[in-house]
Length: 221
Image (cartoon, rainbow, N blue to C red; front, side, top):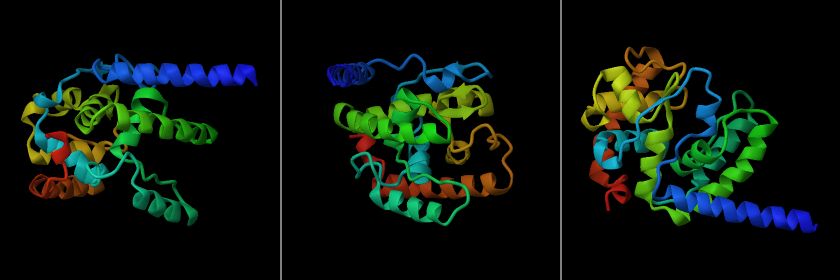
């Protein structure tokens, strides 16, 4: 029991310290990057160098309540549980905060390790929501998310697919990148077809609404 208590105390202390550090310092590498057999291409950019259309696109596609929740969207989680109870492919209800916590501190994957990760994901989501602000969460998310085979962050993705900086993405380009985020190794960004093309167009059309209604306002306060 003494060993367990010490382990928990050390884990809490170290996780809090690292989270505070990443509030100011870019995470140098993630578990997902380290185990990626395709290598790592990334280029960290501050949020001020990323077009607002990209921010609006991921809010529209991934987390419409990003500015109003505390890290967890209970409605989305409940809907995901109802869908999963019916069988078929497991779908999540993760927010951008949860995805950031997973991408930075944890690992990907399914099976029993997924359930172990989910418990830790709750803890790290709680930490970043309380030790970072929403702008920092979005900045880190857009810099560590996998945007293609061996490609991480929207800057590296923009350079790969469009040959330009993320600071100059059009709404259509931002929509395509956001549409591919859930499955970046399989969904084409440069020449999308079928679902990815339609979904990308839908996201691009929603970007204006996100900006007008202020669904991304917390990022720019």
